[in-house]
Image (tube, rainbow, N blue to C red):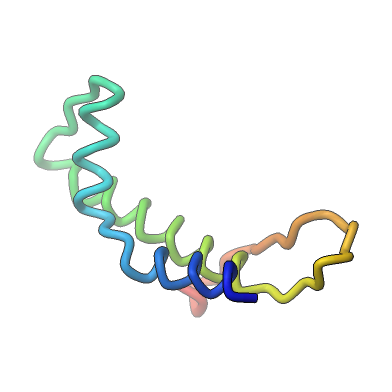
Length: 76
């Protein structure tokens, strides 16, 4: 339980803007200024999805597939 809460907290504090800079540099990608906000918006959507997936409750003996999330406009 504590581990799941830690992941949620880490995701909630995840800096999409900083991640975009670090990932672009690591990949050797130059994001043009006019596309930058769109890239950050997509990372923020992925962050929202991850928070919902990692907040799904499962017990430690669960052997089913990982939880999934299908975004809807009202969820984001």
